[in-house]
Length: 395
Image 1 (cartoon, rainbow, N blue to C red):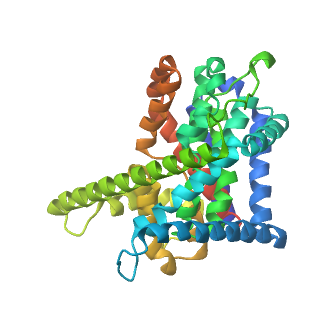
Image 2: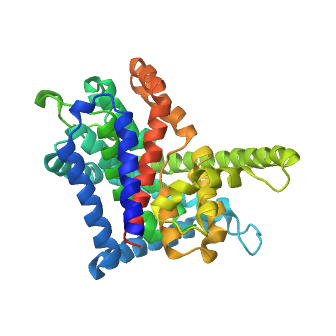
Image 3: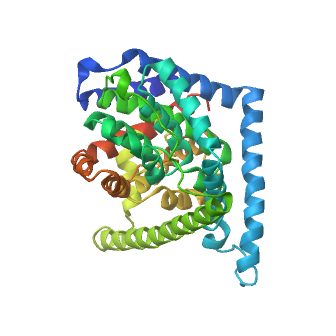
């Protein structure tokens, strides 16, 4: 029955995407089918085979080792600060972003990551029939944040029609930056966060390929990675990466302060009228039917729905921090489904971030992003639902 519910959820997600489509006759059914099969195979391999488990554990161990290195730097700077038994979230989690951003910046400067991403994207393009730029950007979005992923294809922006712009923007919104994965796995189980990365890449391409189908001439379908970094040396890359990481950490901290405080204000206002009720509870009941289809147990679906709803109206960090205390009381399947759902930038604030980035690259195209902003958010939410549902089929 759970498998049937999961298949229904996938059909519902694809059906909603179809109703939103700009060109129903131009949908690449073959490519979408191939990517759905790829999702199922990847999830099956990672969750049910010994080799897949070994890969996940190995990657998680690598991230944990990097966290140890990053902690050395943090302790040197703030080690003398007296904190309570539970530590300080900014010190223990957010400052790790600086070290991870530095590593990414160096790998980007050395052209290691861009080359790997280009070849994987090219292979994905050959297999699915999707354009190379969209495939490259989908893979690129696994490693870099919303702004950085779009900036990496700035030299190809003049080729992007509104539909192509929708696809690359959707990939950016439906992913997360590798620089903050270290922070995520300090909060939630690493194996589900790591599996969410390829699932979200494929889900974003599936949903956006239904909503905004494209047919690109060969002469306009090229990827150039020659100008992905403006750094002139490894040391400059390290310095710029550290500064960028520090900026991200401060932005995340500022957003957490604002959103958590605003959430407390909204809940206080609600409770003036309805004692004992909260925004999270309301969202939980609204998303409960969807949660049931995704595979969440009926006894846990309202709490899980409240976390998913919190992520949409605030951001993933706020939702993860609310979900962390619940982990011990939730089933493994619910933990996996919700964690995969939370591992993306699909929230209202991301619309502004993407529109601002596009405006900085090509001011004429920023108005297009603003015009399909809500469609972009709905598509990103559908992406998270699809990824979480596929993960739930194998838990």
